[in-house]
Length: 328
Ligand SMILES: [Mn+2]
Image (cartoon, rainbow, N blue to C red; front, side):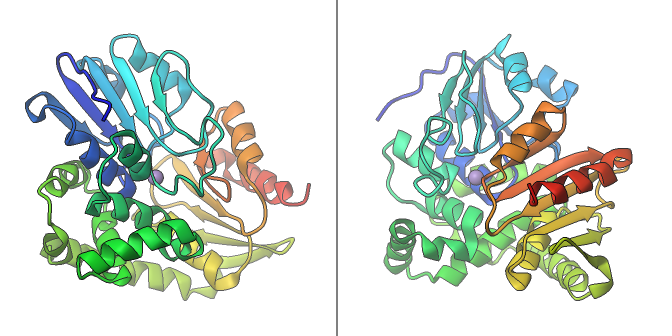
């Protein structure tokens, strides 16, 4: 096992979703618990605010897990702290940091379906609950098409008397926290996951179960409302207005139910910005993601999925551009 030498205080900056908190938890196992804190950026922001960057500067070593933050942010943190990244998002290699992202160096996302797998390989860990939850979290049912990893998940299930649906339910319960914008709760989950056999604790957490009922009601309300949908050049566009961070769930279910390329715009999450989310069944969005980043948008994604945060006065232009992209 490669050991990480950390002098002084460390910060684990992690994505707010299941893969993010599970990855953070795997990393915490390798660090001195007394000298490390966990943090997720403001939920919904795939970048760091000025205050967050200032906060990072109080740490000797900043770990960034399961998040492809803008290179500018990473460089800003680098000024005062050593930076180590563990990730599997599409991103260019970044110089001056320990950039552990096999996908940035040419591996496929099929081979690294989760950041937890990147960490598991790096530390030569066993397949633990956080490892498989990360895989199921980022891929849900689609992991069944990835034989190597579905076998790994199934083997874990057999060994622990769990079903795939149990894992999926744990993912939904964990993710309910970011969807309800419970930042503190999210930041505590990596620590909870370190306690080992926590499947029951996750499945029976009363607060998370109640979150789930609220969110499921909202997602179902949206997906059953046909007045929200318009079609543009055979691309399905859905306009929603919800305070919950459920755009990725809505987009995923909308795409799977229609089998189309879909775009969802949510006007209800931020005061001054909209969320835009795209999912394609047949078009690689990587070049579009790159273009949008170059034009100054906060965009991120993984091949067939893209999320963008857009100032409200630019939403319609961006929508045009996205729809046009499919017809190039
Ligand atoms: Mn991930």
